[in-house]
Amino acid sequence: MEFTFVMPGWEGSAHDGRLWDRARLSSLKIPPGKWLLGGAGFPLSESCLVPYQATKYHLKDWDVPGGKKPQKYKELFNLRHASAWNVIEQIFGVIKRRFEVIDSGCYYDISIQVKVIIVMAFIHNFIRVTDPTDIISSDQESILPDACQPATIEYRELHHQGIDCRDSTRATKLRDEIAKKMWSDYKHLIRYRQRHSRPPPMP
Image (cartoon, rainbow, N blue to C red; front, side, top):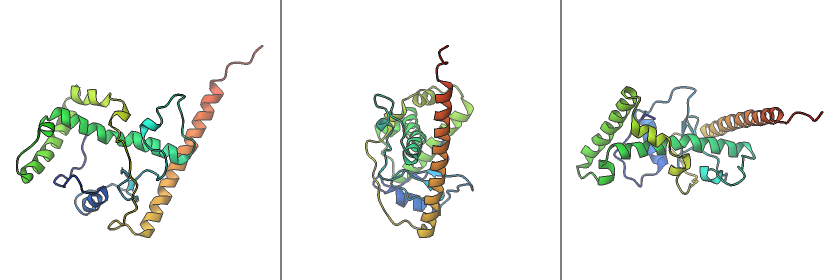
């Protein structure tokens, strides 16, 4: 787990959509054919895929007796989105363990605090690249995914800078195409396992 983009200095109450707008106007670059995963507060766009609204999302919702499985393509997409999104929660856990100043409190001027965050991200990446035996990262990655999953998820319909109706329509179509392809592959895999797990016929 490594940082690829950091934008410190914002107040904790800033909405995800506002941060996304500013990041897109700054140095955030997304290669063609690649996507970022955004939480429910982010706008759906061709470069940022967010969960389906009004559809089960949390990993803990699937960890129930009987091993409940997705029943439609939107549920499968959200399940896999949550699993991948969890990496973000995990890396914050790593940073907190690696740099105690985050939990103990930093009383420097805000301009210094911004630089501290950038340096911590750089040092973390450097350790990950140069030290494959890094214990802190390995321990955090072994945590069950749902351990860091937020308790609730809010869906908001907001207007976002630079995203018009046509962009939204294309993004919705793209997400549906990805989700339906996942669902088709998933059903094919289930059928394959069922065929090959049947006991041999009785003589």
